[in-house]
Image 1 (cartoon, rainbow, N blue to C red):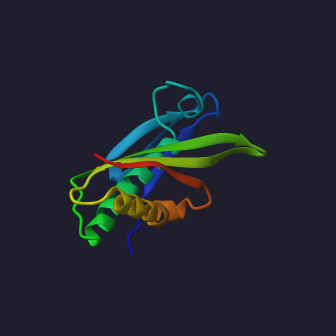
Image 2 (tube, rainbow, N blue to C red):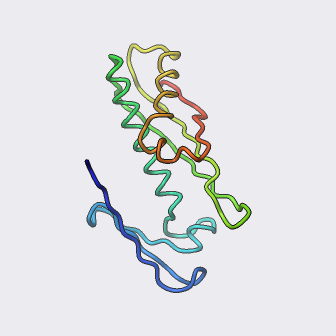
Image 3 (cartoon, rainbow, N blue to C red):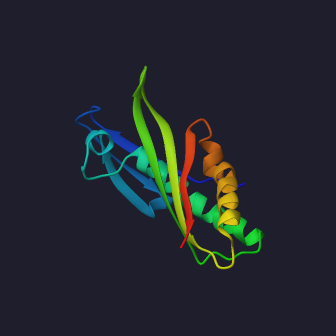
Length: 143
């Protein structure tokens, strides 16, 4: 069993406060704030971007692994994830995650690639963890 950790610190009120998080025992840290979460173009990150990064990286690795199991070697897999945060009764909720993937995979048909990508969308560990959220593979194409 593998256990991964992160930590976050928040100081101050919701709107005026600020925070930092750290992952990978100091491998990466970044600031976050009310503005970086709910505003536009503000310096810093937010939990939804971290979820998007986790989902995109997990999906890319799982797709490469599943392609390899099917006899194909991916030269590259580029996944973009978008996490939607909406106002809902009682506060806020992540309501949708969309994934777009472009891959370089020699000797695979478009149909085979799409079938494998859809399978991975359902079965990568982060997709499973986020299964209460609508996850859509909006595009999967070969380069």
